Image 1 (tube, rainbow, N blue to C red):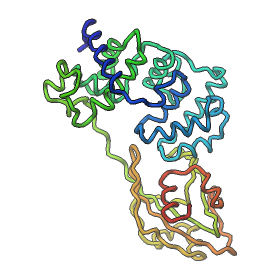
Image 2 (image 1 turned 120 degrees about the vertical axis):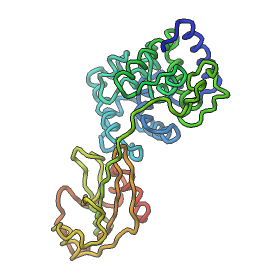
Image 3 (image 1 turned 90 degrees about the horizontal axis):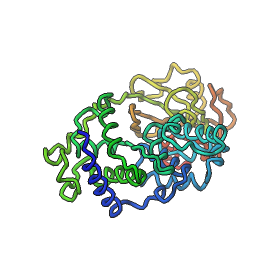
Image 4 (image 1 turned 45 degrees about the vertical axis):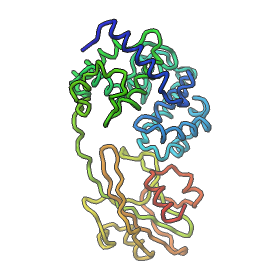
Length: 359
């Protein structure tokens, strides 16, 4: 249901009034610098504000301008990103910084249409930057905004379907303020983040409870409609931490799989959990290591959940005598403790090394 002109004016007035009284003073809301806004949006994709804020501050400290980020080494960018997950975002961000410097002389495009052509910028991010930095009257629609529009205006189409996207886009286009699109978009996002929350919203204090479809028909828990996610794929990882003196053998992940560009250990992926060194008899390199070194299992299974995968991970620690020179396969190489600390690693690897007091 697309509201008429007068309903839109009333809605926007109430929304802006609520926002001015209730919004959080987040750092990236205090600037119109497109670089800082872009940085915050990339970091906050699928990341909570509390978790993302320290990363935003760290990145601005190390790379205060898009030129600084463009000239950085990708390994350093990934190392700074460590812990946020979705590392393709960091690689895309680094690529785009170079693109902006090389193709746009360091100046961000000023429209959502132009911004959306940059790598890693979807429609939402492009609209957010265009409206926050340049005042373009374009609606920024994230998950919070989908939820607000669906509940208040009674949109029951699947938000991920083509039909649903068109319906939400039409409504968003009508609602966005032409006079102050930046405040409007910030307000819609904030309203969904702290008032019209996913579970158990406090509708009694909502300024829209007199017109809200979900409140009237008690459908807060049913809206927005979203297709069910497919079950996460199970994978079984068996990591071998090979230590010689103070050094550990690590390798860069280069295939088109999770954690590309990060460093991990010698890995055996199996179809089921492997619970004994005898289970690895088919791996020639491991046989040599098991014969010359001392092996111990880190007595814990780690469950690491990614967006579409659930990793079941076991770690085995092999200590090799100093006089032995094991034949390492692939791109494994020994790194000192200081080098291991500086390498970009999946947060799981970093966590385990700290738990065993190596780092």
